[in-house]
Length: 317
Image 1 (cartoon, one colour):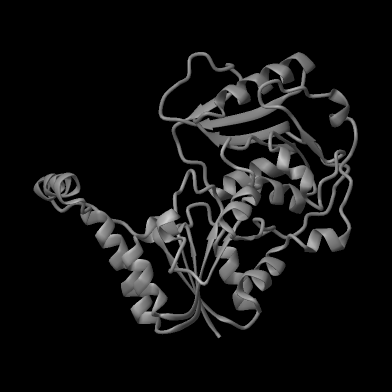
Image 2 (image 1 turned 90 degrees about the vertical axis):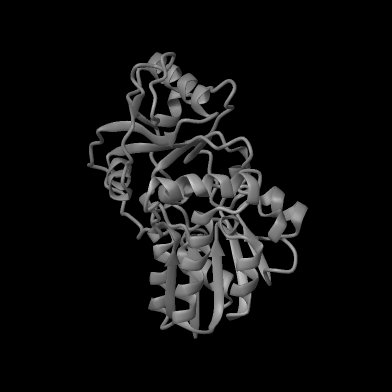
């Protein structure tokens, strides 16, 4: 069987899908849009592209990106299944061409369509659309599936000492006020934390203990920060009811997590001992949550969220 994944794998999560498919003896290929690099050869072409975008509604860089995908796919030949993650990055015309290259064409949405709109692709393109967002699945009749545990399960080490009690890294966006409020609560409770915000500008009103960085934080660096922290934190975007990868990393590391995502209570792995759900507008954080240890999940529940089960479900293998 031949399967191709087309995605923008900035964080490296999609890599594990390919590795899992290969473990199952499948000829798996990855067209990674993160590998696409385009630079204008001179300033005149940059200016011409500006006019093209404004007056012709045509972006040279976007056209080159579509061709990057199609050229790679042409070399790979016909596929049994093609999965696209972040389908909003390709136009409808390109998707229609991709569809002719496979027996089954499917998509996975790991973020809300309010953030990455795909309404123009929802009909006549994909055989199935999977989504992590419960509400959008109900509204648009998508197939629901969560993100996945991509890491091997870590054993609990009760002797380990941690550099940080709580850790989160996030971009500068509408969640910043919530992060600031939570940091103030931790200060009141005398709980140490490592909060990192990726931003090109300083935020004057932010708690001085929150770190601002202009540098990209690598995937391996984030994993090391998770390992060095006792508890993880997730602040969900207001548009999302799906679960971020932070939850599945917490399952793999067997760590507690604090979250603003109320929908986590509907999932089989939810345990109030392990997951503290707080109100983003008025975050109440009981110190007792820090005084109990992580309660391991049963194998039956844990395995439901592994990448092995994800691959079986999405690809039907």
